[in-house]
Amino acid sequence: MKSKISSLSKNEDFKSLLNGKKISNSYSTIFFKKLSSKSNKILNVSFVAKKKIGNSVKRNKIKRRLRNIMNEAIKSINMNLNYSYLFIAKKNIYDANYKVIKETILKDLTKVR
Image 1 (cartoon, rainbow, N blue to C red):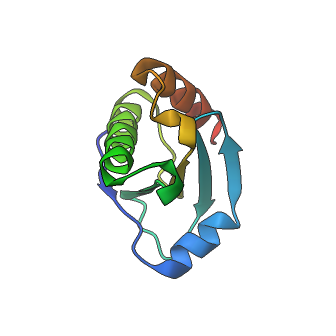
Image 2: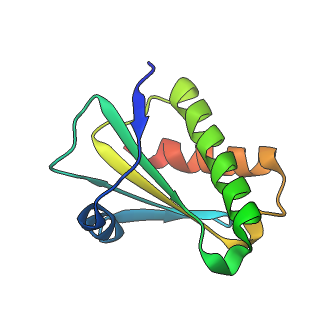
């Protein structure tokens, strides 16, 4: 099922997601929670790469990788559209192999139910 992906825009949404459930792996931390102001037809996903990771080129590369992984996850996994997701990248994600990152994140996303 193909659904529309949108990014979180309100500061309150980010703060409430940080109070929700989380799953951590060696490459990222995934926060997820049901937001009351959210539509069930749109998947809310945001990606954060902190300045500690590196310059803007590195941070944008990480976010592009995560966005691509999320697009593939929607096609292969039955995602729960009631949840909003927040991905916070960790420092070692930049040097890691794309396939390893993808397998790890897909395994964690299947745990979200």
